[in-house]
Image (cartoon, rainbow, N blue to C red; front, side, top):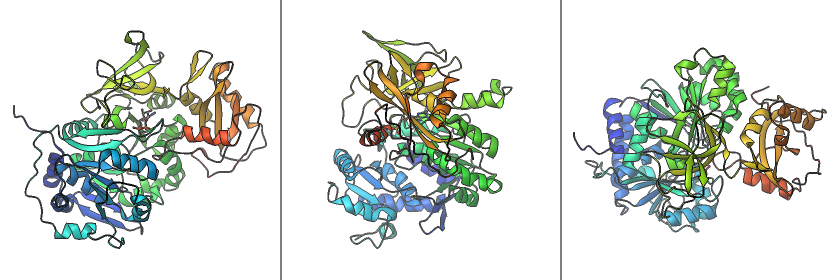
Amino acid sequence: MMNYPLTLAQILEHAHRIHGDKQVTTLLPDGTLHRYNYIALYERVKRLANAITQFGIQRGDRVATYASNTYQHLELYYAIPCIGAVLHPLNVRLSPLQLAQIVGEAEDKLIFVDSGFTAQFKAFQHKIACQQVIYFDPTAADADVPYERLLSEATPVASWDIRDENWAMGLCYTSGTQGEPRGVLYTHRSMFLHTLAANQADVFGLTEADVVLPLVPMFHAMAWGLPYATMFAGADMVLPGAKPPCIANLIAETGVTVAAGVPTVWAKAYPELRKRRKDIGGLRRLIVGGEAMPLPLIEAYEKELGVEICHAWGMTEMSPTGTFSKLRGAHRSLSDAEKWRIKAKQGRPIPGVELRLAAETSNGFTELPWDGKTIGELQVRSPWTANNYYKVKPTPEHFTTDKWLRTGDMATIDADGYMQIVDRAKALIRSGGESISSIALETVLLKHPYVHEAAVVGIPDEKWGERPFAVVVLTEQTTENISDILRQQLASEFPKFWIPDKFVFVDEIPKTSVGKSDKRALLAQLASQNLLDKSSTVCKNQIVEPAHKK
Ligand code: ADP
């Protein structure tokens, strides 16, 4: 057989030659839509590639982007790796200090800055080492060579020159939910194989007829691989810019069929989508990941909007897809409620990914059974899973001696191979030697019509080690004793020691830079307001925007 290197240039070339007329649509800040096709994109990428090399960028050099989901960012997603350099999308929501550290560690040689982030970037530019900057915005004060001029003056590259599929193509940092972000370096080969796996019918299942909307930012785990998967499938792509004012309008106007984002985004978008139900008939599937999609929200989308919810689990370290939740043929005869219960699990490993459940012993790890009950540490390996962090030697905390990645997640796996995250290992509440899953408690709390958002955290306790505290955002004001009502709701499903010692009612649960519940910030907030003391009783019943249950 030919020793044919697996590179991203193949994806670009295929999209150009076979699907050249397919569209990339970007929502611009003024609300208008920018459209062009893959042929136009291809031509710009070829000129951009040459332009980048004029800045002295060579094979292996890191080139950063500080950008939202736009066509220019998509062009960079191809141009940078296809000249052998390394695409490094910076998380625009990190603090200047974190960004300075990350840019320093990555040794970025050149940074592309989106129009919407010019001022934000300039505010911390003096703190970072990289001073070669190209602005999308031609009016940026020091935009000597703005992006468009750069492109118009460049000649197209004659051909791509990636000699080894194991060359690095991208560097992405974890979102830092539980600690400082860590860098993961992808290769052409790993991303190509991830793209093939993601595009299987029982995974993302994208087809040429789809219109795909990645709402997940392009700096969050490579937008879950969608910029590559969409173009390899030949589907149209819709890019939402920095902050689409109304997701429902964008979906209706562009005929989106598949969209991807974290659960918070879908919880927020539900009321608008419901209002425009008649105009979003083409929307067939949501790919949801980053954190657990609560079962009531899955039910609302499937029952009320007829949109299939597919839970995906993964990590930046896994390019990022690891499991995908689709029903099996054998599930066809189940009731809707039973189907949603399965869909609330994180799904089965996608082809190419191996999972194991492990318990640590004095001489290594022992494997645990796949019985849907036994909780263990989730470990993974695959051709698109990292074997170390960028510039850090592998440590036993993250990688086993037999070379599996320790995900930091605690999970169960059932006999059919459906994995369910119980909690992150660090978030699992240990009370009197027993484990309590914050995710399981949150799911049941969210079933109550008064609960708009819920987060359960472990608080140190002298007697039990830790005890659960529930933090709740209410959907409406009530004079009822809501703590007692919620306690009863939980008591019907969990043993007594699982019931949180205290319920605190707040206006909102803080979110991380990628929209996940930020329990570290929540704990700090509760501590600063002296709300961690069991005896303090604060009940701030609020009226908030109607959620999916209204
Ligand atoms: P960070 O760990 O900093 O949040 P990532 O964005 O890469 O960085 O997140 C990976 C983690 O997100 C996983 O280890 C898991 O804890 C969580 N996660 C991802 N997808 C899901 C999901 N569908 N359900 C529950 N948790 C998820």
